[in-house]
Length: 337
Image 1 (tube, rainbow, N blue to C red):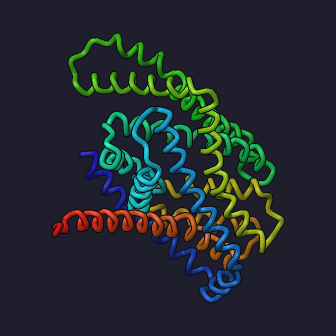
Image 2: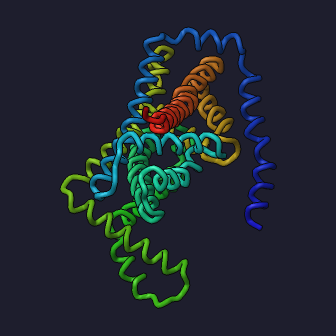
Image 3: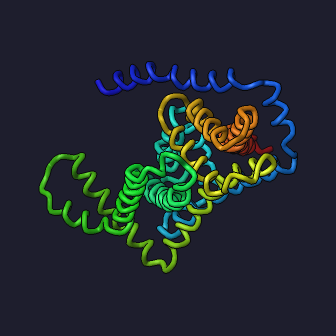
């Protein structure tokens, strides 16, 4: 019953995302947009692509480091491959960064031989660290943007956003550092229900693995720094893109613009957050004084680097691995004379 209702809701609201995208394009001048895109220096585009490649490598290294600390099978390339599958699924499912986690769990089982429990624990720890870094950056952005964004100057709104971020941060802290107490309480429950027993066992395993990470001195700090770098590089690309047009917009405001657009893109309307992300970022940039043509051009390039290029790169990695395995298989099938 739930799934048909979700599909019906999605079919109703999907035209909204399409309309947003069409509206932004219709309001802008296509020739003007192309002129602004063409005026972006090649060195800047190569820098942005380089930063995006660094992001993908940092993510793979974070996963690789976690696997090594947990004492589980680890291969840097296979974890890069797993994240590539996740990126592809993220791109084709509604919303931004919504559908890829299940794909990562399945590929961890396939390529590294993890159990479902191990795979979900690894994905949960990495995602919790990633969200922790995102919460911290957003707290800094909210405090900094308060004097630059009209709705944040209304103190109830500012307080609500601040408390929401604090609540998420507290939840993540307890998830990563206080799960052991929860596992002890759950262990006292007497039940014969298989799903509840599986949940109790998973929470216990999760608590054990997070405890093992805490035993490695400085490991949580390293993981947090890696997550912080990944998230900091994301809006840094917008800062670099804006630089040739204006220096009047503070960098932290541009950080906030990127994160607000990212959260808007998480609304499950179209695959990869298409429409909502572009409309949100273009609208905010025009509010800060850029022309619509400039805002749309910057948004298009930013989305190409952070979305389409990632999709192309991920498909290339997956395709290269499959060709390699096929060539390897054919080589072993050749009969010896």
